[in-house]
Image (cartoon, each protein chain N blue to C red):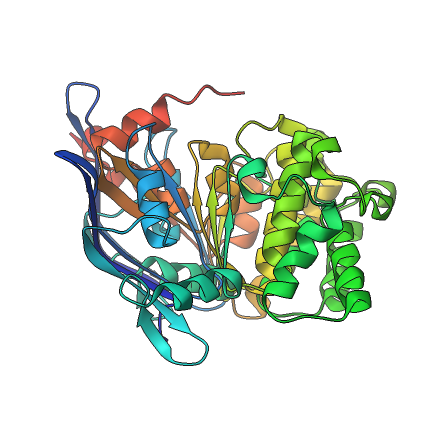
Length: 227
Length: 256
């Protein structure tokens, strides 16, 4: 489902004496449907960078990133937009939304985007928000004023609303209490059971051991650290 | 799929000075394209060339018309282009006053565009106008007031209502949230996002506000000195800018 072939990336900082930083060198990996793979490595090893490359958020200089057969590295913007709408989900650590939009609509939006009716999308959003213990009285408010933990749970609800065949999870259990952590882990397990291919970053080791089938240490691909 | 708009080699000179040079891109139905760059980078020149307000010195702006398929709007006759800009196109000016008729009531401003495409039944026109004022959150009891009595944010929303009432497929926007305070901006962004999704609009938005493009635009072009220096997915250009100027632009934004 997700396949990387000889993928490399450098950053060129034009405004800082044109420094060229090699961040990822020659990564090849593949994740099958129903499998969850953890990216590991110390801070700065390039876990988030690699994840952003797989989402098409960071440009990849060399290699191929195939998601359901589409090469993200070569794809036109509109193909990437389609891929992200239908196939590839990403739960980042930060919630970014248009101010004023009610939480319920924020969570329902990915479903509306793939053509689910407003009623059904809202029903699914309500189900997820209830599961993630967001109090009902907050559903009609914009999440921009919520606490950090609440925002993160809204972000997770939004990320799991549409059943993406491929998912990227950046620290989905960070800063959650035990009960909510359990909910998130069961969401991940459900996603695996329905056949989603998942790549995740988990600093929470117990969570990683529980949901991940394999670990890939990113530092082996990081030129700076290996040298 | 046929692009809704195919911009090919658009070039405009002001004497010796470059307005914009060799700009090309395709816009597909439902896509929102942002154009950013500093003052004088040529983004408004480009927008005005595409919308038919300026005649480019070279290039084509091919629009997929409802009746005849793809047509170059630069070479089409003036009446045809004017018809297009009253039906399938809309243009939202930075200053609402440029896009409104200030001496005509709010309802009249919206109704005028309907009459221009052949609506004649007063009751229908008034009902549609009132419906659109509601959609842009202007109270129905203001329908007979002139826009001169409206606040800047209300004028901008009225301008959007006037533009969208005929169900255009492509909207050109020049700094639509410029000059509005942030709470009003947020309302407008919310409104525009909803309209894009529910009506399947395509839009081209010129702005220098990177936060606005991140929330509204799927794709982004960065312009400098009349040239497109970088183009791509909005979040990719903002999070991993490749060109020196885009890097400078992104790193110059003050964090709130």
